[in-house]
Amino acid sequence: MHRLSDIALTALAPLIWGSTYIVTVTFLPGLDPLLVSFLRAMPAGLLLLLFTRQLPKGIWWPRIFLLGALNFSFFWWMLFTAAYRLPGGVAATVGAVQPLVVVFLARFFVGTPVRAVSILAAVGGALGVGLLILKPGAALDATGVVAGLAGALSMALGTVLTRRWQPPVPLLTFTAWQLTAGGILLLPALFMNLPALAAFTAHNLIGMAYLSVIGAGLTYILWFRGIARLNPNLVAQLGFLSPVTAVALGWLFKNETLSALQWLGIALIFASIVLGQRGLRRGR
Image (cartoon, rainbow, N blue to C red; front, side):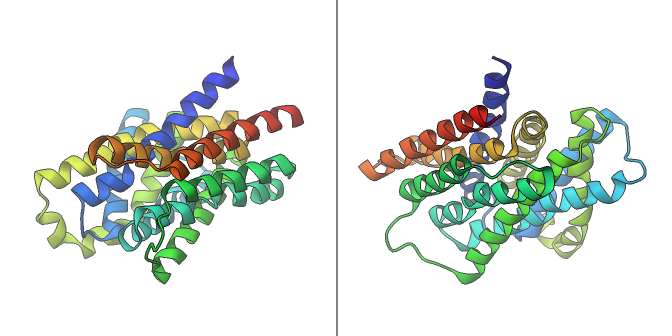
Protein backbone atom coordinates (compact mmCIF):
# COMPACT_ATOMS: atom_id res chain seq x y z
CA MET A 1 0.00 0.00 0.00
CA HIS A 2 2.85 2.36 0.82
CA ARG A 3 4.41 1.63 -2.58
CA LEU A 4 1.19 2.56 -4.40
CA SER A 5 0.92 5.82 -2.50
CA ASP A 6 4.57 6.59 -3.28
CA ILE A 7 3.93 5.97 -6.98
CA ALA A 8 0.77 8.09 -6.95
CA LEU A 9 2.44 11.04 -5.23
CA THR A 10 5.47 10.87 -7.52
CA ALA A 11 3.21 10.70 -10.58
CA LEU A 12 1.66 14.04 -9.61
CA ALA A 13 4.92 15.79 -10.55
CA PRO A 14 4.99 14.82 -14.27
CA LEU A 15 1.23 15.25 -14.49
CA ILE A 16 1.69 18.89 -13.43
CA TRP A 17 4.78 19.31 -15.63
CA GLY A 18 2.57 18.47 -18.60
CA SER A 19 1.14 21.99 -18.31
CA THR A 20 4.57 23.60 -18.81
CA TYR A 21 4.29 23.88 -22.59
CA ILE A 22 0.85 25.48 -22.69
CA VAL A 23 1.74 27.89 -19.86
CA THR A 24 5.03 28.84 -21.55
CA VAL A 25 3.57 29.62 -24.96
CA THR A 26 0.45 31.30 -23.47
CA PHE A 27 1.91 33.41 -20.67
CA LEU A 28 5.61 33.70 -21.58
CA PRO A 29 5.94 33.90 -25.37
CA GLY A 30 9.20 35.02 -26.92
CA LEU A 31 11.30 35.15 -23.73
CA ASP A 32 14.90 34.01 -23.35
CA PRO A 33 14.84 30.34 -22.24
CA LEU A 34 17.63 31.09 -19.75
CA LEU A 35 15.61 33.89 -18.15
CA VAL A 36 12.51 31.68 -17.85
CA SER A 37 14.66 28.94 -16.30
CA PHE A 38 16.13 31.38 -13.76
CA LEU A 39 12.75 32.80 -12.77
CA ARG A 40 11.37 29.29 -12.36
CA ALA A 41 14.19 28.07 -10.11
CA MET A 42 15.33 31.00 -7.96
CA PRO A 43 12.08 32.20 -6.33
CA ALA A 44 11.02 28.67 -5.38
CA GLY A 45 14.52 27.83 -4.09
CA LEU A 46 14.82 30.97 -1.96
CA LEU A 47 11.32 30.50 -0.57
CA LEU A 48 12.10 26.95 0.52
CA LEU A 49 15.54 27.96 1.80
CA LEU A 50 14.03 30.68 3.99
CA PHE A 51 11.72 28.06 5.44
CA THR A 52 14.37 25.38 6.04
CA ARG A 53 17.20 27.73 7.14
CA GLN A 54 19.96 25.20 6.53
CA LEU A 55 22.94 25.28 4.15
CA PRO A 56 25.05 22.44 2.74
CA LYS A 57 28.34 21.49 4.37
CA GLY A 58 31.61 20.03 3.08
CA ILE A 59 31.32 17.69 0.10
CA TRP A 60 27.66 18.61 -0.37
CA TRP A 61 28.50 22.03 -1.85
CA PRO A 62 29.92 20.69 -5.16
CA ARG A 63 27.36 17.88 -5.23
CA ILE A 64 24.44 20.25 -4.80
CA PHE A 65 25.66 22.57 -7.55
CA LEU A 66 26.14 19.62 -9.91
CA LEU A 67 22.63 18.36 -9.11
CA GLY A 68 21.25 21.90 -9.45
CA ALA A 69 22.80 22.16 -12.90
CA LEU A 70 21.57 18.74 -14.09
CA ASN A 71 18.05 18.88 -12.64
CA PHE A 72 17.37 22.59 -13.17
CA SER A 73 19.85 24.99 -14.80
CA PHE A 74 20.95 23.02 -17.84
CA PHE A 75 17.84 20.83 -18.05
CA TRP A 76 15.38 23.75 -18.05
CA TRP A 77 17.55 25.76 -20.44
CA MET A 78 17.40 22.87 -22.91
CA LEU A 79 13.71 22.22 -22.15
CA PHE A 80 12.60 25.79 -22.90
CA THR A 81 14.91 26.00 -25.93
CA ALA A 82 13.23 22.91 -27.36
CA ALA A 83 9.77 24.23 -26.40
CA TYR A 84 10.36 27.52 -28.22
CA ARG A 85 11.97 25.97 -31.33
CA LEU A 86 9.89 22.82 -31.82
CA PRO A 87 6.19 22.02 -31.91
CA GLY A 88 5.07 20.64 -28.57
CA GLY A 89 4.66 17.11 -29.94
CA VAL A 90 8.17 16.94 -31.37
CA ALA A 91 9.73 18.39 -28.21
CA ALA A 92 7.95 15.90 -25.97
CA THR A 93 8.77 12.95 -28.24
CA VAL A 94 12.47 13.81 -28.25
CA GLY A 95 12.45 14.13 -24.46
CA ALA A 96 10.76 10.75 -24.12
CA VAL A 97 14.12 8.98 -24.53
CA GLN A 98 14.98 9.92 -20.94
CA PRO A 99 13.62 6.74 -19.24
CA LEU A 100 15.68 4.57 -21.60
CA VAL A 101 18.82 6.55 -20.70
CA VAL A 102 18.04 6.12 -17.00
CA VAL A 103 17.99 2.32 -17.38
CA PHE A 104 21.69 2.29 -18.28
CA LEU A 105 22.85 5.18 -16.09
CA ALA A 106 21.20 3.58 -13.05
CA ARG A 107 23.18 0.41 -13.68
CA PHE A 108 26.45 2.33 -13.69
CA PHE A 109 25.83 4.74 -10.80
CA VAL A 110 23.57 2.88 -8.36
CA GLY A 111 23.93 -0.74 -9.43
CA THR A 112 20.35 -1.21 -10.61
CA PRO A 113 20.23 -4.28 -12.90
CA VAL A 114 19.41 -3.68 -16.56
CA ARG A 115 16.25 -5.73 -17.03
CA ALA A 116 14.58 -6.48 -20.33
CA VAL A 117 11.24 -5.38 -18.87
CA SER A 118 12.68 -1.92 -18.07
CA ILE A 119 13.95 -1.50 -21.63
CA LEU A 120 10.64 -2.75 -23.05
CA ALA A 121 8.65 -0.36 -20.83
CA ALA A 122 10.89 2.59 -21.77
CA VAL A 123 10.65 1.89 -25.51
CA GLY A 124 6.90 1.23 -25.29
CA GLY A 125 6.33 4.49 -23.42
CA ALA A 126 8.36 6.46 -25.97
CA LEU A 127 6.33 4.92 -28.82
CA GLY A 128 3.15 5.81 -26.94
CA VAL A 129 4.29 9.41 -26.66
CA GLY A 130 5.02 9.48 -30.37
CA LEU A 131 1.55 8.15 -31.22
CA LEU A 132 -0.06 10.57 -28.79
CA ILE A 133 1.40 13.87 -29.89
CA LEU A 134 3.67 13.58 -32.92
CA LYS A 135 1.74 14.84 -35.95
CA PRO A 136 2.56 14.06 -39.61
CA GLY A 137 4.70 16.71 -41.23
CA ALA A 138 5.82 18.18 -37.89
CA ALA A 139 8.65 20.66 -38.43
CA LEU A 140 12.09 19.64 -37.22
CA ASP A 141 14.64 22.20 -36.07
CA ALA A 142 18.16 20.81 -35.57
CA THR A 143 18.93 23.07 -32.61
CA GLY A 144 15.62 22.20 -30.98
CA VAL A 145 16.17 18.45 -31.43
CA VAL A 146 19.70 18.62 -29.99
CA ALA A 147 18.40 20.70 -27.07
CA GLY A 148 15.65 18.16 -26.40
CA LEU A 149 18.11 15.26 -26.38
CA ALA A 150 20.58 17.15 -24.18
CA GLY A 151 17.80 18.00 -21.73
CA ALA A 152 16.70 14.35 -21.57
CA LEU A 153 20.27 13.24 -20.83
CA SER A 154 20.67 15.94 -18.18
CA MET A 155 17.49 14.98 -16.34
CA ALA A 156 18.32 11.27 -16.59
CA LEU A 157 21.74 11.79 -15.00
CA GLY A 158 20.27 14.15 -12.39
CA THR A 159 17.63 11.56 -11.47
CA VAL A 160 20.20 8.82 -10.97
CA LEU A 161 22.68 10.98 -9.01
CA THR A 162 19.87 12.31 -6.81
CA ARG A 163 19.15 8.68 -5.88
CA ARG A 164 22.85 7.99 -5.24
CA TRP A 165 23.48 11.14 -3.19
CA GLN A 166 21.01 11.38 -0.34
CA PRO A 167 22.18 13.95 2.28
CA PRO A 168 21.27 13.57 5.96
CA VAL A 169 18.74 16.40 5.80
CA PRO A 170 14.96 16.59 5.29
CA LEU A 171 13.59 16.34 1.76
CA LEU A 172 12.45 19.97 1.83
CA THR A 173 16.01 21.11 2.55
CA PHE A 174 17.47 18.93 -0.21
CA THR A 175 14.99 20.40 -2.70
CA ALA A 176 15.70 23.96 -1.54
CA TRP A 177 19.44 23.46 -2.00
CA GLN A 178 19.10 22.17 -5.56
CA LEU A 179 16.63 24.82 -6.70
CA THR A 180 18.71 27.64 -5.23
CA ALA A 181 21.94 26.27 -6.71
CA GLY A 182 20.22 25.99 -10.08
CA GLY A 183 19.05 29.60 -9.81
CA ILE A 184 22.52 30.85 -8.85
CA LEU A 185 24.05 29.16 -11.90
CA LEU A 186 21.51 30.99 -14.06
CA LEU A 187 22.13 34.46 -12.56
CA PRO A 188 23.90 35.77 -15.70
CA ALA A 189 20.61 35.35 -17.56
CA LEU A 190 19.00 37.88 -15.21
CA PHE A 191 21.52 40.61 -16.02
CA MET A 192 21.40 39.86 -19.76
CA ASN A 193 17.62 40.26 -19.82
CA LEU A 194 16.90 43.22 -17.54
CA PRO A 195 14.92 45.13 -20.24
CA ALA A 196 12.67 42.10 -20.82
CA LEU A 197 12.20 41.70 -17.07
CA ALA A 198 11.27 45.37 -16.68
CA ALA A 199 8.59 44.94 -19.35
CA PHE A 200 6.92 42.04 -17.54
CA THR A 201 3.14 42.24 -17.49
CA ALA A 202 0.67 40.81 -14.98
CA HIS A 203 0.09 38.07 -17.54
CA ASN A 204 3.78 37.13 -17.47
CA LEU A 205 3.91 37.23 -13.66
CA ILE A 206 0.98 34.82 -13.37
CA GLY A 207 2.73 32.36 -15.68
CA MET A 208 6.03 32.62 -13.81
CA ALA A 209 4.37 32.27 -10.39
CA TYR A 210 2.72 29.06 -11.53
CA LEU A 211 5.89 27.61 -13.07
CA SER A 212 7.98 28.48 -10.01
CA VAL A 213 5.76 27.74 -7.01
CA ILE A 214 3.69 24.86 -8.41
CA GLY A 215 5.74 23.65 -11.38
CA ALA A 216 9.04 23.73 -9.49
CA GLY A 217 8.74 23.97 -5.71
CA LEU A 218 5.82 21.58 -5.14
CA THR A 219 6.49 19.12 -7.95
CA TYR A 220 10.19 18.62 -7.22
CA ILE A 221 9.50 17.92 -3.57
CA LEU A 222 7.26 15.07 -4.77
CA TRP A 223 9.74 14.01 -7.47
CA PHE A 224 12.77 13.84 -5.16
CA ARG A 225 10.66 12.01 -2.57
CA GLY A 226 9.87 9.40 -5.21
CA ILE A 227 13.50 9.08 -6.28
CA ALA A 228 14.52 8.41 -2.67
CA ARG A 229 11.84 5.72 -2.20
CA LEU A 230 11.40 4.03 -5.59
CA ASN A 231 13.52 2.36 -8.24
CA PRO A 232 14.92 5.14 -10.50
CA ASN A 233 13.75 3.24 -13.60
CA LEU A 234 10.15 3.37 -12.39
CA VAL A 235 10.41 7.05 -11.47
CA ALA A 236 11.72 7.88 -14.94
CA GLN A 237 8.87 5.94 -16.59
CA LEU A 238 6.35 8.10 -14.74
CA GLY A 239 7.67 11.01 -16.81
CA PHE A 240 5.61 9.65 -19.72
CA LEU A 241 2.54 11.10 -17.98
CA SER A 242 3.56 14.66 -18.89
CA PRO A 243 2.50 14.41 -22.56
CA VAL A 244 -0.81 12.88 -21.45
CA THR A 245 -1.52 16.02 -19.40
CA ALA A 246 -0.42 18.25 -22.28
CA VAL A 247 -2.86 16.58 -24.67
CA ALA A 248 -5.65 16.56 -22.07
CA LEU A 249 -5.25 20.31 -21.56
CA GLY A 250 -5.47 20.87 -25.31
CA TRP A 251 -8.64 18.76 -25.39
CA LEU A 252 -10.17 20.66 -22.46
CA PHE A 253 -9.24 24.25 -23.30
CA LYS A 254 -8.63 24.29 -27.06
CA ASN A 255 -11.40 21.93 -28.16
CA GLU A 256 -8.88 19.56 -29.72
CA THR A 257 -10.10 16.09 -30.67
CA LEU A 258 -8.28 12.81 -30.11
CA SER A 259 -7.76 10.36 -32.94
CA ALA A 260 -7.76 6.59 -32.61
CA LEU A 261 -3.95 6.61 -32.78
CA GLN A 262 -3.78 9.10 -29.91
CA TRP A 263 -6.03 6.93 -27.75
CA LEU A 264 -3.76 4.00 -28.63
CA GLY A 265 -0.76 6.10 -27.55
CA ILE A 266 -2.38 6.87 -24.18
CA ALA A 267 -3.15 3.17 -23.66
CA LEU A 268 0.44 2.24 -24.58
CA ILE A 269 1.86 4.79 -22.13
CA PHE A 270 -0.19 3.48 -19.21
CA ALA A 271 0.51 -0.14 -20.20
CA SER A 272 4.25 0.59 -20.27
CA ILE A 273 4.16 2.17 -16.81
CA VAL A 274 2.22 -0.78 -15.37
CA LEU A 275 4.54 -3.26 -17.09
CA GLY A 276 7.60 -1.45 -15.78
CA GLN A 277 6.48 -1.28 -12.16
CA ARG A 278 5.28 -4.90 -12.09
CA GLY A 279 8.45 -6.15 -13.71
CA LEU A 280 10.62 -4.22 -11.27
CA ARG A 281 8.59 -5.51 -8.34
CA ARG A 282 9.06 -9.12 -9.47
CA GLY A 283 12.76 -8.49 -10.09
CA ARG A 284 13.20 -7.09 -6.61
